Image (cartoon, rainbow, N blue to C red; front, side):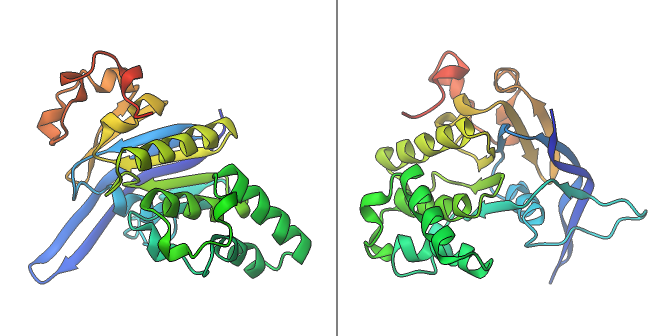
Amino acid sequence: MKTQIKITDLSKTFRTTAGKTKALDSISLEIFEGECVVVGGENGSGKSVLMSIIAGLEEADSSKDSSTPVEIAGKVGLVFQEAETQILGETPAEDIAFGPKNLGWKKQAVQSAVTDALAKTGLTKKADFPARFLSGGEKRRLAVACMLAMNLPAIILDEPYANLDFGGVKQVNTLIRQLKAEGKTVVILTHEIEKCLGLADRFVVLFRGKKVFDGTPSDGLYQNLEEWNIRNPLVAYTKVEDLVWE
């Protein structure tokens, strides 16, 4: 399999009034093209910091040698937990067109990309609807549509189920299935693993800035997840395939 994202001995330290806080401690991780990876961990485990570095929004600590801690094949899109902060257009159609226009695409190519992205994310009927009035699930789908329009090969979803009702969770999971079917690389950051682990090819757990597990979802469920402050959904379910809200 072709490597999409390669992380080697990555660390990140923040300076605070109390001194230095190590958010990430020597993380190494390889994500392959077309893979769906769920990265679990409690709040403060380092999930969002790691993916912000991958997306180019944060810089890792300087390496002691000349190696690059993050190597990416193609660009990576990041959908924030609060997806509405990414909306720049008045309508979904305007918002999706923003990226391709800034890339200098011709008008016909922009329109084609917008039409295609709206269709893939189920937002065609909302193309000219005020974007600020979309539901939480629709706003997350709109953020993904913007990345699809620019043909980004990898998409990171940061806590995609936050503040969503059952219907919104189903919308997001339907979209994840579509992204997988198209061969996109999908990384899901969440502490709500019972909602999506059934969609994953791999399960990674971060705890206090360290990678403490990296393996199959099935193997992950037989770890002592409670030790890492993650509720094991097998309390309510019997097999990993059941762990997807749909």
